[in-house]
Length: 357
Image 1: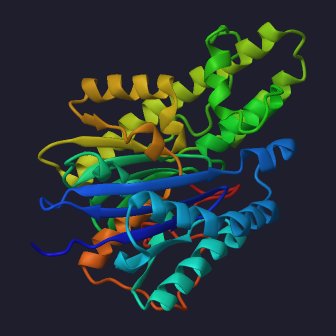
Image 2 (image 1 turned 90 degrees about the vertical axis):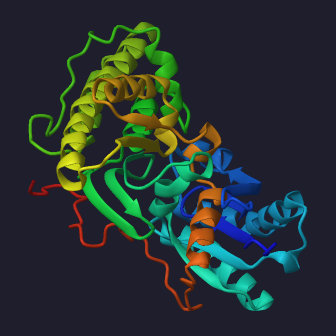
Image 3 (image 1 turned 180 degrees about the horizontal axis):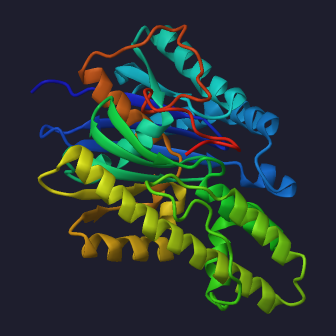
């Protein structure tokens, strides 16, 4: 019986300090031995959003503790770890540098391989941590920093079909919540407020809704919420805005996801159609329900990672590290942080105002 690789994964791209130990069983199925995540919600709450310098300082204070806890909870000795995988991008460079430097130092001290990981690749492959999912599949990644449709064809083989040209979906949720007076991170609370509101009270814009393809835009929607929020006179007004905002998001995502299905099938011609939704916003029950219905209408099998693997975590980083370890894809210790590291490096960089579509 050959020894299976044991990988330490480290994630620090934004406001979670995370570490995990992942290996696999004799059948090649991944096994999460530990998965520790330290949130910085309390650090950033009073500012209404992530402050990069404070996030980096919190990573520095916590990373040693979090890694030690991940190793202890795995039941392994430090000498049993075969490689270290650290997120190198995309993300906030001051935050990325903390986990990246720690991972390199750990690998150097233990004389084991170092593997740099694209954060988006971690999300892209996260459903394989709890399912026997085969390639290819269509991925919708929706989080506070990213909103993309990707064709996942294998390790290192990704084609971007659509992306946001401005704000990420999770960012739109958080900023709308802030306008409604909800503490950071308020995005998850929008769903709760919306249950008490009238979704048809406000007609909100749907940017690039009628353009072809599956690119997304949320900045104009956020601006519209800013305007109507200035006239809030009661709690019911807040509920109605939240409900109208969420309904608008559902309408946008329904149409754009349907367009993504068409693009994916045209480019891939899959024998069996799988649709995976990952990232923190994948926890929104209304969005989940709408996407499940859409999959049923279009003969797609839908897959959602468990809630604890939707947000940023070390297990997804360790898993990609495990796959790359088996392929002997190691990196030098001078591998740089890449704050704008795209998963499909052939795709044009589209984020920003005034983008031509």
